[in-house]
Image (cartoon, rainbow over all chains, first blue to last red; front, side):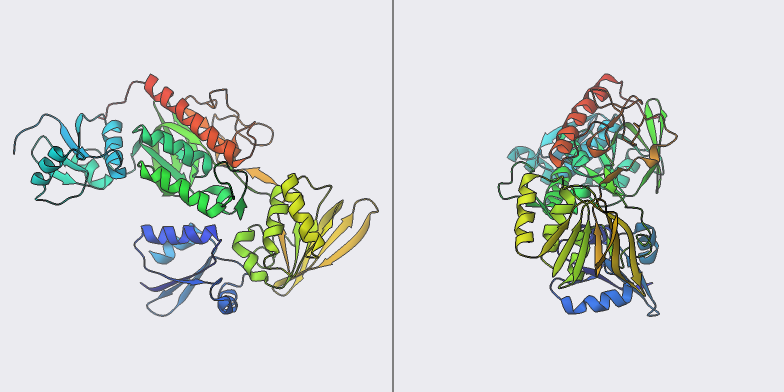
Amino acid sequence: MVKKITIFTTNTCAYCVMVKKYLDTKGRNYEVVNLDEHPHRQAEAMKLSGALTVPVTVVTKHDDSQEVIVGYNLAKLAPAVA
Amino acid sequence: MSQVQKIIEYGADWCADCHRVRDIFGTQNIAYEYRNSDDPKVHAEMLKLVNGKNEIPVLLFPDGSILQNPDNTTLLKKLGVKVDGQRKHDVVMIGAGPAALTAAIYTTREDIETVLVERGVVGGLAAVTDKIDNYPGFADGIEGLTLADNLRKQAERFGAVIDLGEVTAIVDQGQFKQLQTSDGHIYARAVLIATGSDYKKIGVPGEKEYYARGVHYCATCDGAFYRDKHLVVIGGGNSAVQETIFLTRFASHIDLLVRSSIKASDVLQADLAKMVKAGKVSVHLETSTNEIVGQDNGVTKVVATDNKSARKIEFPTDGVFVFVGLQPNSQFLAGSKVQLDEIGLVKTNQRLETAIPGVFAAGDIRSGATMQIASAAGEGATAALMIREYLEAKPHPIQN
């Protein structure tokens, strides 16, 4: 069961828009961390993802385990938020 | 409740959901009568049926039952149509970039039921382009993301449905084309292939290993991670120059490696020259990239060759952005009857129809296309008109 979804985004990132669109179609609530507005959280996104890219989607389950999806990857995102 | 002989739809011309239900009536060959609720008398008549709840469309069935703005599944069930895995559409568009979205505006405005299937970004490559200065109608240019969003909204306004998924094959079954997708099979009377292209890889060592950890293909996505850092951009066309200029917002310095000479527009080259003069960009012509080198989790340098002297050069860098051209998204057509040219682009006749009757192509995926957003939109509109002619010439299939 999904407890929380956080997406790290930037203003110009089109793939970030697609992740949000997908979650909207599934009726999922999520928190957006815009790295253009909060550049100090870039290090957090990089540490979670191991990558220098957005979107980074962090799905926290009810047991507090986390699954991190880098990029717009429906094959991974869909089962993670199901 | 008075008995009626066919479904009565209370709706409005501006109402996207009204177009949607009419599309379903059309696909399923259902007789209906449209009553425009913008007419006050019709509106009053409608409100009486639904106890004053003002939401359209309102559907009054011959058995006296009423549905108010039903979703597709509910409506199809009421119509007695099997809904699992046998969805039949007027037209399915593979891709939702500028070509398909423009085509969808045209088809849905004519109540041709239209579904677009998109595996990536709605808006295609236009959506990931920082600024578009040569799409007509925008005197000061427009951000790619904004243009993509506008196209999407316009298509959805008339009832186009965009499904997020992937088409993996097309099979010609005559009256219907079967499309195999990531969510099962769907069927369409006509198909538009508008899958466009993706950015090419260079194909050098280190490129794959450091993908997203120092090697990138999307400046608008990842440029922000390189604030005050040193970058290498590889490429010499419009995209390479455009995105280099975009990246100067973040990077302290950019080395632009161009295999031969720059082949970008004069306007872009002039803007690049300003960046060079300001010391933000150094351009290296006749320079071929050989390897991307890194350690731990990051890129440290690019090794290249000066083509004139054959001398090896190293460019220390914190990240690499690659813009070396496009490759067509036509792999899913292997094994189909659609013909491809030697590059993998879809061959069409003058009506934009492929070797499969009823299957059309438009935009960057089409052989002979000029790879511009404006021409993609134009081809999308043309393809839509061809699709309309094709559908009008065919007898409407009747559901069992």
